[in-house]
Image (cartoon, rainbow, N blue to C red; front, side, top):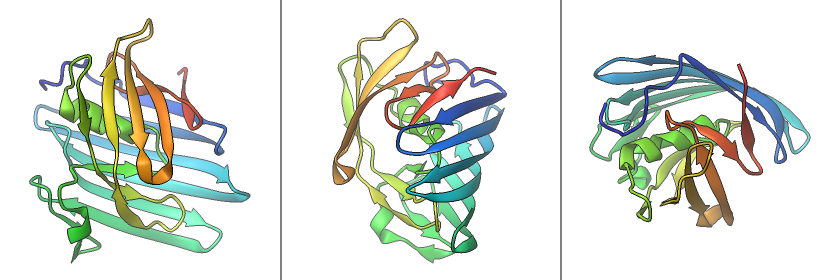
Length: 196
């Protein structure tokens, strides 16, 4: 892989805090041609408990190819399947989703790890920035919509790489910290990497 990051660990975990209480664990399988990730988050947000399990397939370029998300929430169990042709076109549950055209990443609301995808894919130098719209899968439901996002790489810190992150539609901005493998270690208001 030519992303400039080390290979991810076999497993990683995050403690979700502030906007929700919960825990996320993910397992990585990395080959020359692909990155496979399986994980789950169990959390409570806005007085509702939910579980979201995910199976993600990415190319070696860290472009999302497939995302299967199963959730169990107050309304019951459901799942959603996103598939991407690698060139910017998506299907959601087998149906064309033109509103997602131009997105190269799946971003799961239930996961802090999916903010690693555009960072790997874009390979920004310090001072560079880029738009990274994503197919955003909501946690309870799950449902999918387009989410406009922007990343700007700023000077690296003691723990690793730092990026200014913005999601204008959500009126959300934060400075995200990543480790040497390009996984989030600090996501203010959302999650912090747990020690394994």
